Amino acid sequence: MTVPVFYSISDDFTKYAAVSLNSLVKHASSDTDYTVYFLSQDLSDEHKKDLSDLGNENVHVKFFHIDDKLVKPIQNRKENFLRADFFTMSIFYRLFIPELFTQYDKAIYIDSDTVVNDDIAKLYNVELGDNLFGACTDSSIQFVPKMVKYIKDVLALDPKKYINSGMLVMNAKQFRDNLFIDHFMELLETYHFDCIAPDQDYLNEMGEGNILHLDPRWDAMPNENTEPIKNPGLIHYNLFFKPWHFKGVQYEDYFWQSAKETKFYDELKAEIDNYTDEQRAADRQKLNHMLLKEDKTEKDPNNWAKVKEREAVKL
Image 1 (cartoon, one colour):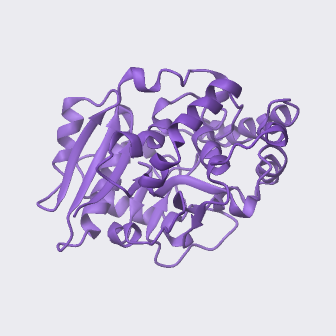
Image 2 (cartoon, rainbow, N blue to C red; image 1 turned 180 degrees about the horizontal axis):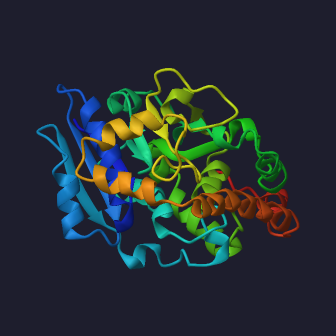
Image 3 (spheres, rainbow, N blue to C red; image 1 turned 45 degrees about the horizontal axis):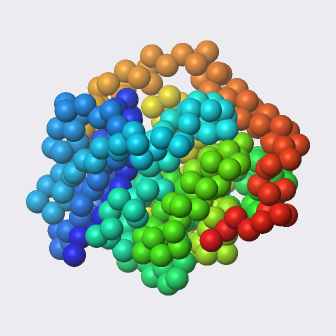
């Protein structure tokens, strides 16, 4: 048996993914077999080698090319912009994992802006029952009134149960048995829901009532309003405040400890040293830009809340 772990990345995110992969390998048990897949459309051969070199005898690194035909219905349109800021197809790759890898009835997905601080097999061994997936409540938005309002009024969901999709323990068999990807494509092509976090909103809506909420230590996110979680299992540098752009970010030490062990350390140090105050100010403004979408989507006659009054969207 192997523990399957999936990342989805674009080529320019390789150096951050390398930090995450290095931390995963460092905390992997020598008694367990792991297979780590990178899903991508544009990963260079050089970067594939960089990532492969981080594996070892029981952590196998593999690559899977996402075909254009597979994601053709997901268009580069404003409704699918990540955080209302830019379009990146890679956020949707995670939704296809159960269909693409039918040899697995269970799988882990994690974002590349993460650091693993415990054996990822512990997460894999969580009993999901009949739930569609396990994930953690999105702590990064609990103190952002506009986001809470968006979740309540536009998504018609409970903000305390709204999960972050940067770490998923996927019940792949349940995804397949419930025809998740067919239902996702139908919703996408019918309504093109205007979303702040597209893949995340779809997962929350389609999985409502069928999500296992996990210990928050498995998706610890920097948050200026809360104390850091002691002994986090996985740190997720969510939203805009990345430790390679901002100093003093909560949990930043975990990132730099792992970064030092990769070939990208000097490049990452140069990135934060050369990142300007103007760029940081622009990053902070992106949050405000993201929140402007709440006003617009609340008035949309085909937002999630209004569609749910007419038909069921959850599986």
